[in-house]
Length: 124
Image (cartoon, rainbow, N blue to C red; front, side):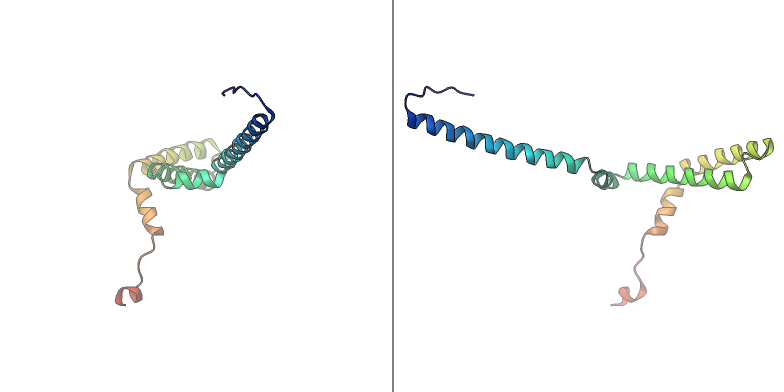
């Protein structure tokens, strides 16, 4: 910030007006940056930004499939009912985790949700 020599009342008034206008523009900039910060911290915005990344999509799909398969295995095989049920459910969980992580299960499931063009739209 520069200090100018003020020698009369007119220069003082002009300097005050200049400083007020700078203050106003700085306040506007701060408000704009704060709104941008709030927008970027919005969970919906974060998910939208992450949704475009293929690695994130496949990671979320794998996590969802693992959680779902573990839940079904626990309910069907009865992990907490007996030692045999526990051991069998752990074995099935390990196998399902290997299948989910190492094969094209994610891409095959993703293809189920892709809308194929209908016969009517093809013949038009």
